[in-house]
Image (cartoon, rainbow over all chains, first blue to last red; front, side, top):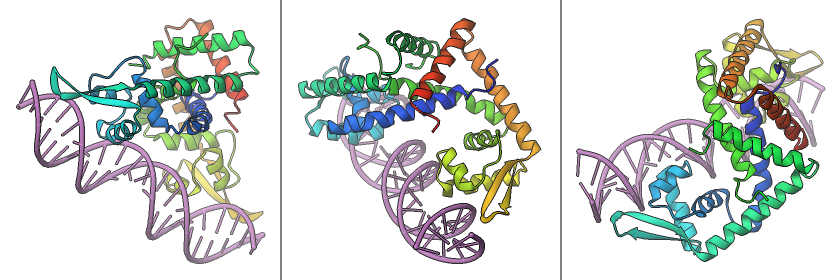
Length: 143
Length: 143
DNA sequence: TATTGTTATACTCTATAACTATA
DNA sequence: TATAGTTATAGAGTATAACAATA
């Protein structure tokens, strides 16, 4: 049996904290805050049809999202445009500089992850990530 | 390459949130709050030689620990006794009811985890947890 | 009436500083 | 002087309520 191990929750939470701590200096080097990165990543695969959908997708309160969008828009990293079909909505989309920045950040984070796990044989690293994705799907972690 | 996956930090954080959400009703059924459980678990393998060591072990501010200890002591789940060797220190130890409660809670959480991962073949579940522990050790997650 | 985006307010949680008692 | 435990205060982060514009 596996009685003498930590709870899964405790392990995931600690691993998450360690990885976030490892990401922060990488993001800081690109002048990006963690929540900026979360928003930019969420927009990478296409615009958000409204701010409230973006809030839901990033699990953030819609009121908390606003100052973040204000700043990112002010930095020219994204655009907010009224939806012609429903003028209450504002479509949020990355600009080209925003798209380039998020690609740079994620590339740097990938390299950091690779260094952190360098002691792990390549095959084990790949199978671990595969299993992580499998469990994430099983637990419906992304919605 | 593995470019199209989520960052490891994002995966761990989300998995942690999902597991915490799954633990909360289990703990609530035992009238235990999450931070109570963290403290009780930390004491399971032996008393803490001082409150500040317990704070460090649970990654909590020593000032935040105090109201939690007050409550748990009031519920008869733990004891605080002055260290005869250094009367500034208070040794924190589980009582028998505290020990029984934490065992009950962890048993219930183990069963919950098992149900959540029931779709995963037993061998995969075991190897996944083994890999989680290996990566946790590699990243020095527990100190 | 319901929803989006927004602002303002209240609340909770966390971090900091200060105090006492012991060493 | 330094540290453990404690208390009180300040700050950051989060949630709640209310408003104008649009549907």
